[in-house]
Length: 512
Ligand SMILES: *[C@@H]1O[C@H](CO)[C@@H](O)[C@H](O)[C@H]1NC(C)=O
Ligand SMILES: *[C@@H]1O[C@H](CO)[C@@H](O)[C@H](O)[C@H]1NC(C)=O
Ligand SMILES: *[C@@H]1O[C@H](CO)[C@@H](O)[C@H](O)[C@H]1NC(C)=O
Ligand SMILES: *[C@@H]1O[C@H](CO)[C@@H](O)[C@H](O)[C@H]1NC(C)=O
Ligand SMILES: *[C@@H]1O[C@H](CO)[C@@H](O)[C@H](O)[C@H]1NC(C)=O
Ligand SMILES: CC(=O)N[C@H]1CO[C@H](CO)[C@@H](O)[C@@H]1O
Image (cartoon, rainbow, N blue to C red; front, top):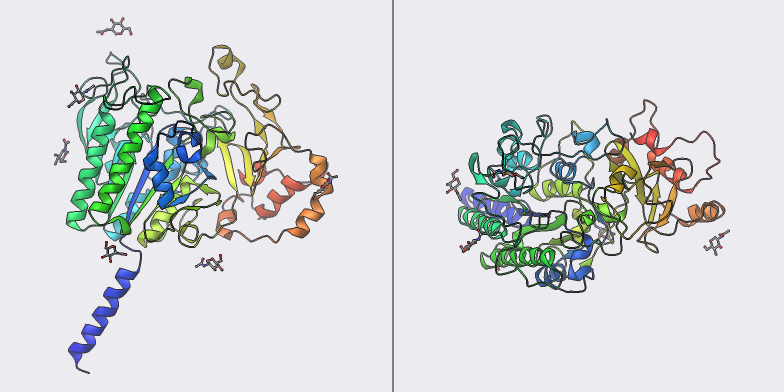
């Protein structure tokens, strides 16, 4: 065999490996704003006005058990991009027990320079990263997306709150990269009266152009598509206004659904659909406190945005990658927005940072092999661990909707859904006797399970269960005490032991 032949063979092998591996895969994360689990036809929304999302689910994998890391925009987005819980990445409050970290436009802080964001890591494999739409991790120059790994940005540092009209509280700016192009309600019009705005069309065009450019350049890309039309005040362009059975919120939904259909069709027409992972989800539950004209639906779930009931935390989610993710599958995996960080790195062939705790799991075995990974879901408000889900069971250690003071002013996080002893207006601690629900049988969290039932059946339950140990790093991360506790056992004990069992440590002391 001549040297040339050897080189040719080696070359063929290495090319074959590159083509066969998933590295170089494009990644698109479509993150909606305040869209609820129940807003999609595929999850039962009665108007059936999301044909493109329903088709995306039919061609991909649907996740009915997918969660955010916090029921509010900024902490949720920070968790997605860092793969870390807000109590680790800094987007939490300590000065107001169980309040979420709200970031108005006057905010002076933002994402810490010590945090490593997904696009920074993807640079290792020459990805081009763009964010289109809402950022919400700080307004000042040092916190903006181009300082945190993104190569391009078209959008805004915040939601389209307003209109404002003074220099103390100006309208929120819209940027193209580092250049301010104008402001919401001014150069970027939103008519609050009619609900007309072309912003979703502008964000759609920006995404199609970016995808085309990277396809031509044959560079792998990461697109973080974060339009905000479903955040109050909701808007749609003229073609969609008045079209929905659901009113203006539905118009906004229909326009986003149409845009998603166009983005997926664009990938197909460019022939890159089979090397692009697209993941659709939302940042938190529907903002039901805004009333039916301005908010979406959380389906059968209790309450909404700002709360750690299912309506605040459970998100619609679909994964799409023709040829790689089996079409028409439903995964019962308990997933989290933080997993999008770890899964994207895995698909890109980049190792996650090893100098810090990462809370996200690599969902590759779920996406490509329909495996189920054993893991809990933690529900936080601020720095307060409110609840934990393990399997179908959810234990609330604290319950709270909002204060009497706020409630009496007409702000209601659970309109029409008060459940006595559950949707409490004072912060109620249940650490010694958690409120437990079986979410399979009672997704609306209305019927707490009798603890007596749990104790008498405990031994039977543990006999019948063969636990799969979760990745040790995941749990280690929650044990901050100097004497390591096995939090998996602690969680089991807390969920299934007698409340009179003394000497037990609460998850709160174990995990936070
Ligand atoms: C600003 O808004 C206030 C009320 O929100 C209004 O009274 C005032 O006239 C406005 N000023 C300008 C310059 O538009
Ligand atoms: C955005 O800025 C880039 C240069 O940074 C420029 O090439 C592009 O045309 C601009 N796009 C818009 C819509 O202004
Ligand atoms: C939206 O775009 C259309 C067509 O370019 C234009 O006629 C309309 O005035 C725009 N509407 C707003 C609210 O900017
Ligand atoms: C993607 O599909 C095209 C044909 O549409 C095919 O030529 C190519 O090999 C496929 N790529 C992968 C990674 O499956
Ligand atoms: C795929 O799933 C099967 C059974 O569901 C399991 O035995 C196998 O280990 C899994 N493979 C990978 C690579 O996860
Ligand atoms: C006391 C009690 O509630 N026992 C329950 C244990 O679980 C079985 C089903 O697995 C029930 O039938 C029992 O009522």
